[in-house]
Image (cartoon, rainbow, N blue to C red; front, side):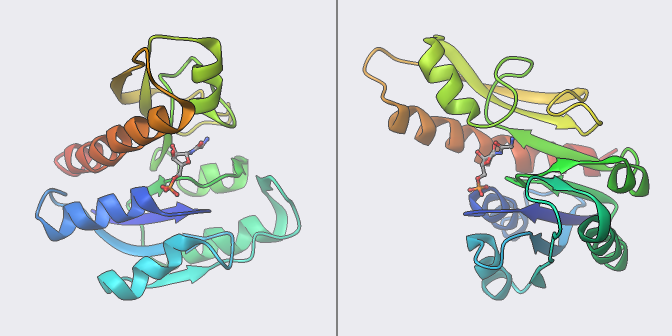
Length: 190
Ligand code: GAR
């Protein structure tokens, strides 16, 4: 199963996937390309480190969604990589029908809350401020509804009395780093 990862930032989840692959925990999946919509995305540094092609793809003209020429460039890049699975790992753009139909049923997204609670931006901060005692992360299939597609798997994180937003974020990210590679491995097993 050929996996393409799309991201916008740090790339800690892309790194967790690549480490899982190195350690033989990614099943029949292997990462064939990394694409970022920001030229300075930390994720791009993972390419040389793990020997995977990593490139910036210009998402213009829109700021928060993937549509128009930028969408066409992303579709062409992912097609050229012959992806069987497209993993959105911190890809901070709303997916529109063009990209969705180009890779129908093949796109999954990682979200840092227990969906359907706290969709959208800053899922960890939303959960912390609401005072929930249990939060976590979700991997789901991507549909046109933002963070609304079918849930594939979730991991639970308890919010302890002494937790700060920062300590909670560390725990949610650790849960993500375990969950996402495990889901990819399971999907690769059919
Ligand atoms: C992750 O926490 C992911 O769940 C979140 O962005 C972070 C990316 O971190 N995604 C969203 O909030 C999407 N709505 P990373 O760049 O270190 O993998």
